[in-house]
Image (cartoon, rainbow over all chains, first blue to last red; front, side, top):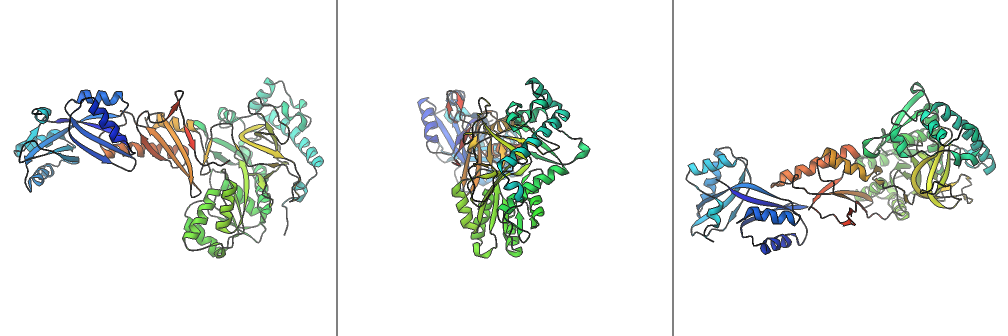
Length: 144
Length: 435
């Protein structure tokens, strides 16, 4: 079970995030989660949206380099130690995390993270076995 | 202290020089006709035979050679002597991956080193001097040329090659170097490093520097002179004609005297090929009249400059050329290395599988050239992790280094972000303002 994330290549200069978010806003794209990774020269904006096909089309037409990647969305109780438990499962199963970011929960008492790992299927199976909740796009945008 | 290395030649009357050139040119044309089928064919196509060349007044009848000819004839097509008679190869980076290789007999090496010796003596060098050569040694002509000239003059020669600047300064201090030979940007860097190490001109014995292989300004000259407490002399040359020492500066510092007994200089209109009168600005063309192995006739340097025969206060009668004021092609000289935009395009397409949409940005920061290549991102090159994007940059950077021989900073930019005027992208931004 996975969620499609859109990654966008952006130069590290003023106005770029403004331009891309404006484009998505005007295109009616709902962003559920986001993270920005940056280096001195460039950044990669990663977003989870309600309609990834439309989003990629919008970005490509506007001349951005964008790519859809599968990531794992995990839900767990919002309490100390819960995130560590998730990480422990990945570590025990020899799964490497490329990057991850958290996003806002609409359900009280729950926390969510997006995980980009070297093996999504293995991560999903291992986490489900330990009773963690995995979400799909429908779960993320179902009750908006 | 001798003022000239070869007073007879360097101060020869114009009439004597013309008759020397006449005699040497006639013999050289015959040598080339007999031994270089490639050039003979060019002469035949133009309907010229050695009989038509009786003096330097007939020089304009001969066909030109260009960098394209060197590529076509690579590697042996312009060789005029059996390989058994050759003792050396030097090389320069060339367009689209093919290098220019030049061959030398011992006679050719001797005349080249003799030209460099003239430059060293013109800069005040004698056998009492310690000459530190920090040009690169190897296929590049800088190190071997000045090294040979320094030996001829009898200087104690320090063949340092480039790099390891603190060690350069340590040797300079410990061994009392008095003459420095390197690129002007490296000279400036040595000067800055000297000051950073807490030393100044009074802590070294340098009195003169001979700097070439890349364009530099009068401002840069003054800066180097101030940093190192020396007099800085320009030197010019190209691998195709031999190497450094084709022309050199005297104490007047108002242009470089061409060693006319070996190289006849002409200025032509780069568009029509017509020879321009003295004092005109145009493309510099050289004819080697003494070289045996690689005697290029009417070689188009692509350098734009002016020749002058005004009397020089140094006493030399050799014609003077101005610093090159630009190029007729798109060649860039970055940290002394020749770089053509076409090479960069070819690396991106053939080696790196990258977008051919690029832009070169050259600048000079603290007297050192900075070299950045901006490459537009494509969907194929992009993925969601930083490390994969950095791997793309590293791959391009390594490919560029292996092709160009110098390091470039690779910066990936967004698609369509490189400005296009009339559909054609602006490929080169040179901010150095050298002319």
